[in-house]
Amino acid sequence: MKYEAIVMGVSSGGLNAMKILFSLLPVNFGVPIILVQHISARSDNQWINLLNGKTNLHIKEADEKEKIETGNIYVAPANYHLMIEKNKTFSLTIDERVNFARPSIDVMFESAAETYRDKLIGVVLTGSNNDGTKGIKRIQEYGGLTIVQDPQTAESPYMPASAIAAIKPDYILPLEDIIKLLLKITRVPSDTNGKQNIKEK
Image (tube, rainbow, N blue to C red; front, side):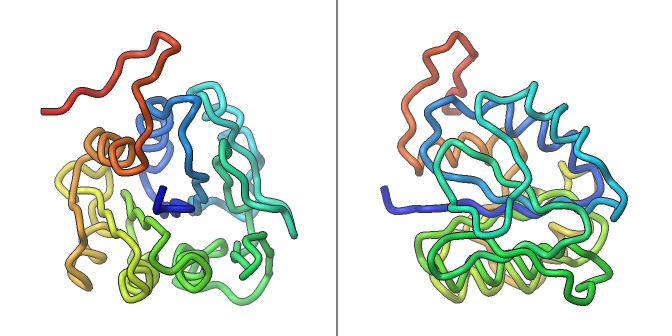
């Protein structure tokens, strides 16, 4: 398998988008997902618990020095920037906000691009600012695959529209087609636990 990690950035409208995306992932999905969702500095992890009930994978907050492993969806903790080190572990920082956000999508995307280079998939989803634009550009510069949600299908179209204005993404797709593409390019077989499979159009 070519790709070693998937990074996702999401802001306004993110919870609904993630419910759709993560519910369609099979238990044997072979690539770890690393997510930045813009959340309040005082946010608890109840939204993570909610999403855990919607997916076959394990969703958890990323821990300092934690090794990135398949079968997990890692989430940046509230009020921390999440970075990926060269040895493919996490580091957390409380550096200044970027694009008024901590965690910042750009910070995570850029560190992931430098670590995984052409073995990385970057995904920009619904959101109301331009965080993620610089990061998805860096992913493309390092040869990674870039996917942006179709702004017309996004609950908040500004963030994906900003990414599309900055680069020519490899794919611009609605949520369901993003998952279908990820399953195809990561060579995951059909789900066998009774959930409905995603069919090619």
